[in-house]
Image (cartoon, rainbow, N blue to C red):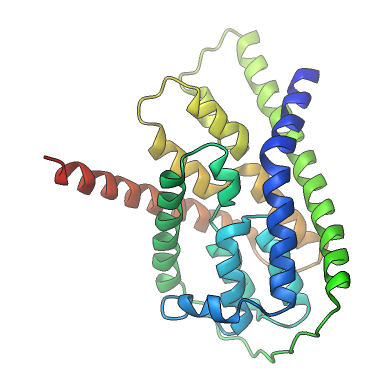
Length: 278
């Protein structure tokens, strides 16, 4: 048990903390200072939102992942900078994983492929999603002092990182208990590591990459898109703390659908690539 907790915290410290800390501070600063207006324009022809700020949030989601994306969207919603419909769509469309986090496991070509697959996935979801129109009055964000922005961001990211560390330890202890229980009753379930990898994305990636499975990337793209039970619990926790009434069961269903779409796109890419080879 102690080894399991130590390994969980080691994963948090080496894989999660560096990428989340840097990107969250940077994203908060860019959002508060409205420096992303021009960059986020590239998404407007492909996605539809009711508020301009939502394009910035979606653009940032490519780099900051969940639960930090949801936290930034929560702040924007509570400040009346985005509508409830846009808040829901950000929750549904934020399938990306932090690139710096992914680079600790994969080569840059694989990371770029994941980003491309996720962009195509959420484009399909966005075009098929229908939400009831919301009467929304935009509130222009206040210009805050840079030091104040950094101070608020530090408080937020420390809270988020501690929440992530706690949930990783909790989820990995559950995984450890399940495996020990199976061993106790001499139950040898084939591919149990694959099933348990859906609990927590970081240890899941490590487990699958170190396994003897031949076709690991279809499994990895599905798990990375779903983001794991731990991240989804963190998202739910952020929503509950602010009393925002959103049905997160629907978000889970959409995330599973996105995982399936991402898997199909990956398989199509693989088929096309192998067909073009001499």
